[in-house]
Image (cartoon, rainbow, N blue to C red):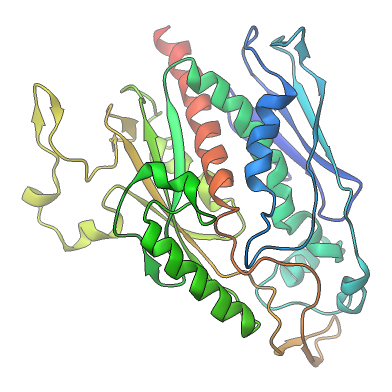
Length: 351
């Protein structure tokens, strides 16, 4: 009940609201004796905070993490790990005029319908700020994956209709958009500036690459690896679609072109995206997510109030022009959490 927990062996529960006192996560099922420090978690949280570049929210949360439990002398103890991040840069004033209005594209209407009450300040629990707990938990999951040589990397494949044509992974850390194509990154910057000046927002596509995953992860029939990965990624507020491997392109293929031939050296191509029958096959796992535009726009929109009377509004406050690239580490975190969970489940089966 509640939908705030995720995972089986490696299980997380996030808590907190955008304009509440704090946010955090409780992680249960993390193995003992893993080296873990606040710095390990902080470096991942730092990738989620707004940068100083064009199109970024002016909200300046430092997102300093505190480890409250589950770690002793720099090692996990096997008991629940509780992580806390205080909200320090809160300005709820722009939201007061929206407390009786349902913002288009947000969860205001549906939260009110479900609970009969909602925290209107910054979207409350439905805010993207909830992902602080996910990224913190993902940092812990990464420690488990690192011990098995598994690496997870997300990058911007497309933003505002501009698509990366080159795949130079070293470039991801060289530009504000975390794009593997430096020329595309320059065009993305221009596109962001153009749309921001119009008071509008942009969506795009994030690709997630997993390397070093051994074959055997995944639980038939309902806990297929791609099913859990899709659920994890679709649980991120701005994600509206997930592809695995060739994704929707398979609908235009013949079986002879879709099947990945096997050789003594492994798979000769990877349209399956590293997963067959719901189980990892040892090839790279390749995923893509469609990210919708940020719904908080500066243009006038039509909506209704709590009495279902028509009103017009212009949204104020501090918002990004696009969820990309801040959503990239969130995608990485959710993939890492799923893989850590399935790795522990596999160890329970095979040792």
